[in-house]
Amino acid sequence: MDNSFIKSRLLSLESCENLDWEKFNQSAKDALDKTSELTDYLKLFDNIQLKQIKPASVLITLVKQSDNQWHVILTKRAKHLKNHAGEICFPGGKFEDTDENLQQTALRETQEEIGLEHIDLKIIGKLPEQITISQYYVTPYVAVLDRQNGLNIRNLSIDKNEVEEVFTVPLNYLIDSKNQKLVKRKIKDISFSYHSIEYNDYIIWGATARMLVNLGKLLN
Image (cartoon, rainbow, N blue to C red; front, side):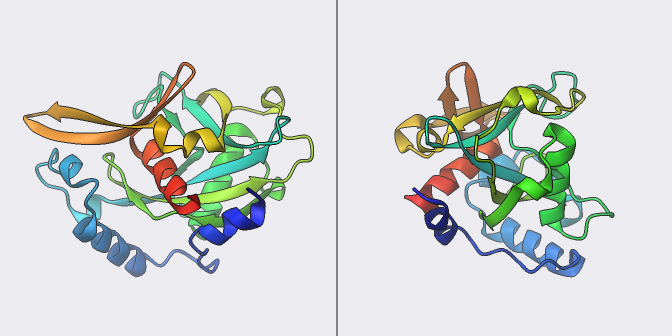
């Protein structure tokens, strides 16, 4: 699987323009109206309103490691954080007023969290937007880390206030449907399900796992 093949399967990037709030609000409304995979999640909220949905983005970074396979960079969030403490996720975060667009948000957050400079990263496409249970409307961008010798985790400048650990997982493992489980739960008498992927001692679940399932569907 080469770079051009992956790029050909991804959704096209939008033009790099300032975030259009009117367009964002309409997209978020459309997503709320059409979404099916989060219908049960949204029932957990008594009143979910459009004004509560906030724009955010993450960066799914692919890097060729010494085994000559594409790997995906993942992080484990710090345990002291208020939201999603200790969970496995991609670098990313909410849109800030200083960001021109959501692509810049993803690159900025990646540099702040794990020290990857945007000069080494090439965004090649994106995945379908996701609405999360924490009420963010997340755009997942896919990037390639352009380094001949791959990524040495020990050389990263990790922000320990946000990130406890950085690790990589082979892409083929993550997008293999045999490694993807659908877990059923019940909260407040409401039944719902979410995706989960186990790798060694890591459990990747929720929105992060959903994004990887979507990536697998596009690539397969």
